Length: 246
Image (cartoon, rainbow, N blue to C red; front, side, top):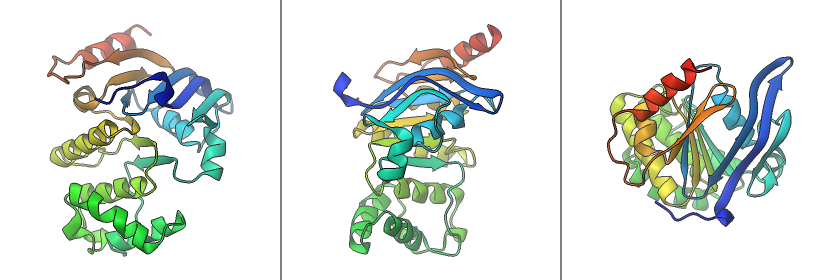
């Protein structure tokens, strides 16, 4: 695991809340994510996991409190500094009739990257993700897992300090899901700050440094040892206890 210090803080939420009209979705969220750290967010459907990630991405503003990324208001950052936050969702959001390479060149050009710069970034990432031989296939012919790998490469094109994952393995088979979770862990170990919302408790225990149990607010936080040793499901037990105690 990467050594961390107070100066390595990337994302900070302070008493952040979000309401839609009269409906409160999140209340009083306090969270700090450091460089080299992978934080999991688990909870029931409608518990606010996606809203939490959208606040970190700057795509939503908090109703109260603050959300900053690299010391800057997250919403302002999303409008003025494209590429500071990478977001991967359950739906890859790629153009199906274009090849993987064409998709990445298109999105990279929107970020202001030259074709040479895009290709230079894509090739090593594709090799690591075992996607090189599929880059020139139409996206519609790729498996969901391969499409998610393309989505991850797209998120990494500008080397963002913060990576967010919203149920990225929801539509993947177990092998593809395991491979993607390993890749998320690798990027955290390489120094990125990562947050993943997931329903997969086993994966959260296996790859995360700590996990927030969220249902409108943070019910509990669990920290795991650095060896990532197999455990007897403490996250599931804690979640059941937290839900039962509401």
